[in-house]
Image (cartoon, rainbow, N blue to C red; front, side, top):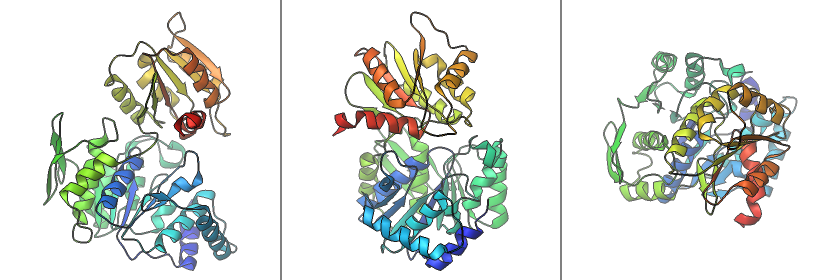
Length: 405
């Protein structure tokens, strides 16, 4: 663990940004925050580069320029460049791809670049780059083997993306003390939700208030979910901090929020039965998913397609959702560190999930098979919720692909 190898190859590649750089970290909400930033800045007419992860179906999803996935040949060329420059330095898959995408974005002559942190912050490969604005969306328990098992330990890791004298935004309403202390220690310009920026609103519209800027009569983001206004507020705080370098008008903010699109984040698919795709894979995200399911209105039965990594807090995830699901379709995933369907079934039974006329647990070898079964059982007024891992959602996306295209 460390950034020395990545920093050395970065120097050899001469990666340098001549435009504002926004880095986004946090336990949950990173993808939504990056997508809103990209959408608003594109509406404002800027040339925007985005590095996000992981991908669902195609690796190309990880790098976007002006809203379009980067083409295969561009990747092939930059991979060759990184491979040549690294020489005797070993790089992980994530370090290699981060350097490659950072290089291609730096060479693309963009107006603004957005980089999403993969895991933690302090030791993440993205952290070899100095952000003009760093956003920490939320701090909660996840990746405990690497980041620690308390919000204080994790908060310190997340705060590692902050820089001296530069804007550091925290969208978590209750930030850990460790994050506050680190920001103060290094002299970052810390913006806190509830102190430096906030939101208010009713069922029709919402308003943002920052340090020196107000945005009124905004439409709700097209991304569904209980936490999206927190994410959107952090986005508007970042744009306020950059307003002298990247001015953005009121209509561009409105259009960007309405047009933002992000797969797998409380994504409700068209048709019947209702199908919800959500990458929730920790208790914090599962609680938000549960809240969103409660807000959907009546469905006679809810089927779950659930697959998870074994190192996740599966008990915590299940605790948030067990009272909202009638029929569990648990699945193996194509990764060695994934929990098996049998292990997930055991966790459900330990949590008190019952099997009777109206409740069941079924085991499957893949998300595709689990989804196909749920679809065969669900009536028109039922719903199917797919969650637990990016791999779970990706499997169901593949199963649905003929319907999508």
